[in-house]
Length: 251
Ligand SMILES: NC(=O)c1ccc[n+]([C@@H]2O[C@H](COP(=O)([O-])OP(=O)(O)OC[C@H]3O[C@@H](n4cnc5c(N)ncnc54)[C@H](OP(=O)(O)O)[C@@H]3O)[C@@H](O)[C@H]2O)c1
Image 1: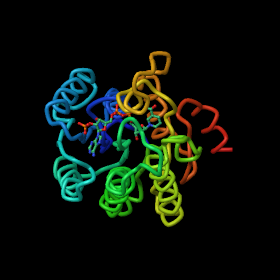
Image 2 (image 1 turned 30 degrees about the vertical axis):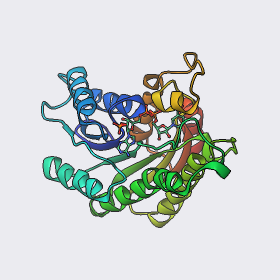
Image 3 (image 1 turned 90 degrees about the horizontal axis):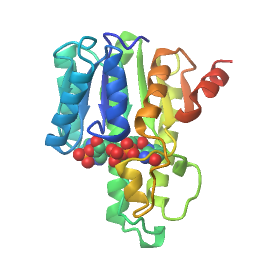
């Protein structure tokens, strides 16, 4: 799939990885629907994306709609407005994520309310958005759903239990979606971006110097490569080792 003239709906787009993936897609000529909860920060991010992609992206090619992806009404609005403005959605990137309380409590101290909120954003929202974009993708026999995960979904890090369990659930949801979509032309990928110096990571490890970690801008090109290269209908990729992993997935 070529990003030029394609339409991508990317969640969690006002900062961090989502913002950088949106910027990288816009530079390739993609049209975008971007979302995050804080409307002012989102509007500034959308302006920066438009400015940065000037000359490549279409002038009206970035649609910003603020809201909480865990709210099903917001999810429906995102997809409805995307289809109204652009007529289709080629790529869905479920990037927005909830970490839970900071500092991160052990599972014994994690309240059910906090755990529910983590699952609402990290599992239910990606499922809802995937359900909403799938009918049009299936009809066109083309589409790509990228769910952003974490090694915390695989490794048992103390304190990361709620977030990690939600990412494990997201990964399995993705695997089953892919199995059910086999032959439909829709690909489903899980991407672990690896450790990055972002607000979420700083909240996960308050007071720890993370300046040695890669910036999300260094990771975003891996998402471009994933969209633009044809690989298997399902894959779990670590963005910081993508070249290797795409090679393996294809062979
Ligand atoms: N940073 C790392 O080291 C790391 C490692 C592995 C995986 N990841 C994954 O990478 C992804 C991006 O994380 P990041 O580090 O870039 O985080 P970040 O810098 O904190 O950015 C998160 C973005 O998501 C938005 N957001 C959060 N909750 C939302 C909600 N309920 N509805 C809509 N938007 C929401 C935030 O804006 P608002 O607050 O205004 O809503 C912001 O735009 C996540 O899936 C995370 O799990 C990160």
